[in-house]
Length: 177
Image (cartoon, rainbow, N blue to C red; front, side, top):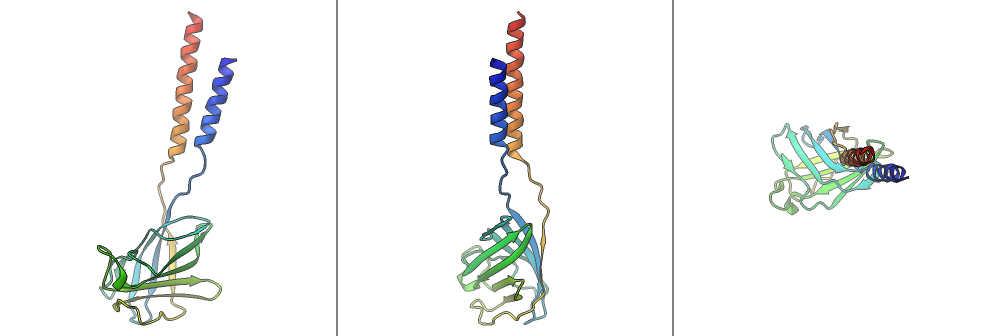
């Protein structure tokens, strides 16, 4: 009877600790700024699959024009991303460089907007007040980044199973004596 209780306790512990966790995901992005003809690329990270949320980071890592490299999350006017089944289905991000906070980028403004039924647009401007609006039909591409996640809840379930095994073997040894 006691062994049965321990088995039930171990199973309960394993089931409670082995729940699905929301894992933040990231996307590489790239676009051709139609105002300048420059290619811009970077990473959007901190998004959740099958949810609408703010990105925790939007980082421009390359611009063929040589300006605007850095973090764009200081104080965005709009920061809304919808990810469904691992794809960005709706995105609106606008930050004016003049409003960024240190140590984030302060020289430039960045706008990205995606609504598959209507438009895809993006622009990186040296104007910190972003007086130019992005041109429609910008080729804005998002590619999911692969993530290597260590499943901590599974480790907890294994720890519980190991402790259960120790208790059972100790009890069995006591019964044999």
